[in-house]
Length: 287
Ligand code: HMG
Ligand code: MG
Image: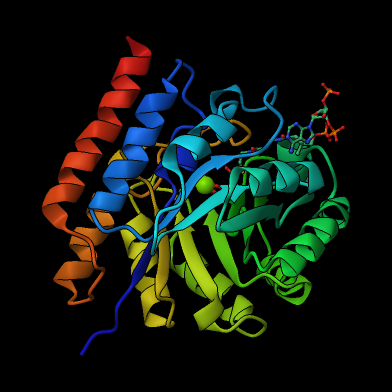
């Protein structure tokens, strides 16, 4: 019997954050509703970051208000600091995600501070979330390659992942930000991380720029990971990671997992419709 796998749908956040055209708030809310209808039970709906840094997600509070509370679904939002946490909490999130980097270069470009400073900014988030009973997910970006520093040492990834766990992260998501990592690189990185974070607390977040994301999912599955992030329609890219294209497409991930015999709780037919809708948002924004 193959074990169930959980998918964290990051399309509304990671998929849309880099879209240059204006995507109406109502369409973002409709995308989340379609993800829910397809059976996705963890959805990262938006980011409470500086609207100047990520203008596409400046309507975070309105998106959250439109989505509302969905029984059985963990509605998640990205928060970089205490201000972001307060906004997300007021908007009614079920879970927040802080985001760190394995490299100083990406940390500086993405959140304008060093890795140590980022942990100082996360500390009040972890503290408040613990008091409020809100689980915190912790991302590590650039787990194999960095747009500013090249190849990333596995020890650097393990150090940041271990630090997130020690601060109180319920789950650590390993971000292969550039979609360039080979299965060998991912295997070596995971072997280092698994010495400090158990597989049950890890998620794989593979961008698919080079078309290798599913091969990297297989490497992670073989090492016991059972949570993967993906974006409907394969949308995505990070404004601070030049050259990074889409996320692994949720529909491709689900088809792959079902072929391997893993249950996901997702209806492939409804998911295909949701993926078409996600791609139409990109086209609409371009038009
Ligand atoms: P900073 O300049 O160091 O921070 O930015 P600051 O505290 O000096 O604030 C600067 C301005 O932002 C101020 O406004 C603050 O009020 C405002 P001003 O006085 O200039 O008008 N501000 C905020 N506004 C709303 N919500 C907030 C907030 N915080 C400050 N939470 C900061 C630091 C982190 C805020 C900024 O650099 C930022 O927002 N960056 C955005 C980063 C981002 O969203 N990146 C993309 C997501 S990460 C990703 O995609 C990777 C991932 O998918 C995994 C992977 O693939 O690797 C997760
Ligand atoms: Mg990402």
